[in-house]
Structures are given as C-alpha cells and as structure tokens.
Length: 113
Length: 113
Image 1 (cartoon, helix red, strand yellow):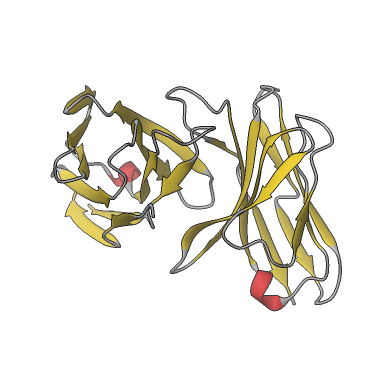
Image 2 (spheres, each protein chain N blue to C red):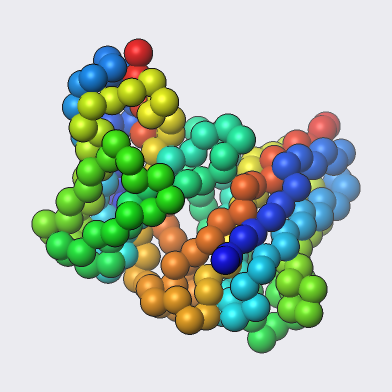
C-alpha cells in the first residue's frame, strides 16, 4: 500500500531498554522527520533527514538516534528509554518542494514504565 | 527566529462558524498550511495558501492571509461535530532548503451539539 506507515502502533517498554520505532514511506520522498507530541508542547522535532545517509538534529534530539540507510526507511531508536520519553511519536515525509507540505504517519504511542 | 502562535482552545456550537487564528513571524514564508489532527491519528493536511494570495476557499473552509500583520486564519462554515479536532497552522520559510515547516502549538476545537 502506498503511504507512510509507522510501527508498532503501541509500545510499552521498561526504563533503560533500547527500543526502535519504525517508519516506512513508499513515495521516495527525500525528506523524513520524527516528531514527538506531548500535552502542552505541541509537536517537537527530534531529528530529520534530507536524503539517505544525511541526518540532522532537531529541537529535542538527546537520547535518540536515527539512521537512514535507505530512502524509504527512517527508524528512530531510544538508546536507553526514560520515563520522560513517554510520548506519541510521529514520522512524516516530504518531497521538500512545492505545496504538499508534510505527510504524517498515524503515530506510535510509547509508554516507558 | 521562526515562531508560530495559536490560541489553545475554541468551543463552538454545531452549525456555527469557527475561526481559528494563527500568527507567524517569518515574512519570507512561501506557503502556509492548516493541518487537522483527529483523536488518535496523525496530522492530515487540510489546505494551504500561497503567500501571494489573500484568500483561498475550499468548500466549507476559508483561509485568510494578512501578510502585513503576519496573520493567518481558518474559517470553518457550518461547523459539525466531526470537525472536533486539533488544528495546526504551519509555515514554510522562503529561503529554507527542503521547505521545512514550523508548526504552531495547535488549537483544540470542540463542537457542541
């Protein structure tokens, strides 16, 4: 199916564990983004990528790692999960030009206990 | 720096018009967007306006842009309970590679029957 998909949809993990959130898009969009959404903070950019093998930090990158070995995938890894990383995580993609803006995935709700 | 501001909350009665407001700071914005987020879902692009336009209408939606005051608004005519959601405005800076977007904090619209 065409689109942008995130997995898992829900995840519960323990403090200190490593967890990876997956994001896959089928449009060959150059740009991909990871946001977290928390009450009172709106959307905060964690990391973004302009192309395969090119990534850059956003507003809140600490405690997260990303990679982009293939254009269509942009996984987000929490190296050692903390309770403050409990959040809803959204992946988005964009061509980087024109009026289409970003296309968002459905989100991953992560709870760190 | 770039900043996009929205009021947090709006409550209207079904059948009334809703007006959601947004202010931005980057005068070189090329596109401005409105996204809708329903509960438990990702953000969906509702509409956008190019910076050389003052108004754009799309069925029940009317976008007004006042470049002088850096003010963007979204009017929803005949608001329905299905319009209850969080609405985000976003701007793309004109001299910004990759058409990166800056999002407002979101306005929660509640529609009462």
